[in-house]
Length: 275
Image 1 (cartoon, rainbow, N blue to C red):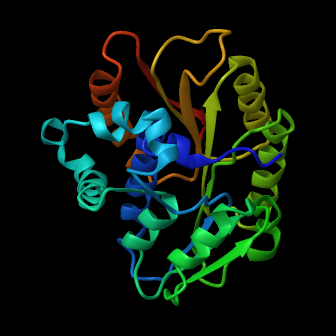
Image 2 (image 1 turned 135 degrees about the vertical axis):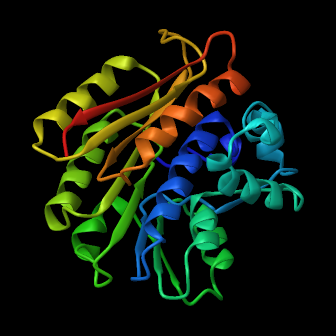
């Protein structure tokens, strides 16, 4: 299925959460001078005009990035907050590829994958002049075996598929474990939506059983789990995250929850397996 279009959800609470984790992870990794490979397995269009018909139809940005009171958030939020504020002045919400490209240096490399026939041309045009970036129209799940281990010796992999079918919850586990087997020191960020908690519990159980080291779970919810249609929360399973990231999330997620869902929201920071 290829019905999912991220433009309907650009800048929503899940994007704020996901991109905050991505920025904090990249900021830490870029403290070292050695080159870094960034892999985005489901990159989308890369950039989302806030005045587009799809963004305006759902207006999820208004309750996500558009609702943030940046002046009330601490310094650890500033790199992400400053970035989205800069693009907001251009009436754009940046996707994960554009965020990564903004942060990465000349010596770093980006590999971006997108399968959707409408979104891929937009992604390719966005980075056509950036020599650091190589885009490919394809399923990023199949890319990790060929890209890892990376020549750069360091890598961050972001996996955030649409989960259009239940099978994808199993596919992400298989893809992630294949990548980890090839490069166990890479940082992997696996995003997931909470639509039915049972699916997430099965995913967590597989992560615990896989003998991976240093696995963390971060989650931000807008309301308690329920059986109604729609996403109530989203999370990230992080393998080999920067050692400072759990502490930062422990500080920032309660503040995000208070700004975006003060009455019914929740957050989670927990270690699934030791380092």
